[in-house]
Image 1 (cartoon, rainbow, N blue to C red):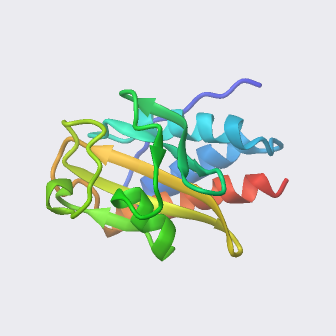
Image 2 (image 1 turned 90 degrees about the horizontal axis):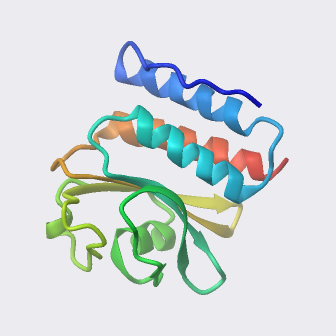
Image 3 (image 1 turned 120 degrees about the vertical axis):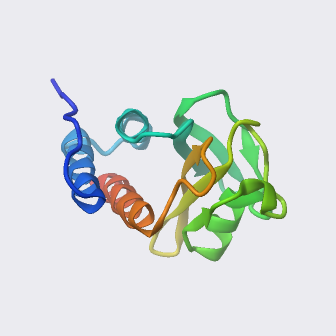
Length: 162
């Protein structure tokens, strides 16, 4: 398979639609979660400005375990009652944090991170994991980023269903 990521253009919403379509092209015909998480992580990491970590934490039945990612080495395991990732997993709601240092219980895997967005990944009632993005820029992620990243996360979830 040959794939070439193209530069994103237009409004932020248009850029996220382009990113979603590129993610869909990457996972088309593939249902392996590790392969798809790896490719989506790489795609998003290289497409978006001002991010220092993009990746997946996958639920092992007890806690979140680091999966495919791009960026600095990460915390390996995150309890469901800890940090931004745990909050997203337990509330089933995307967590958008403008200042991670103000988030009670934040887990500092990379001291350079200032803001974070985490999308929970559920298949029905089953927790699959979370899609996590960090930035060294405070308040990096807005509602448009959240909507766009939720759409990319949905591409990943749909790919698991074959």
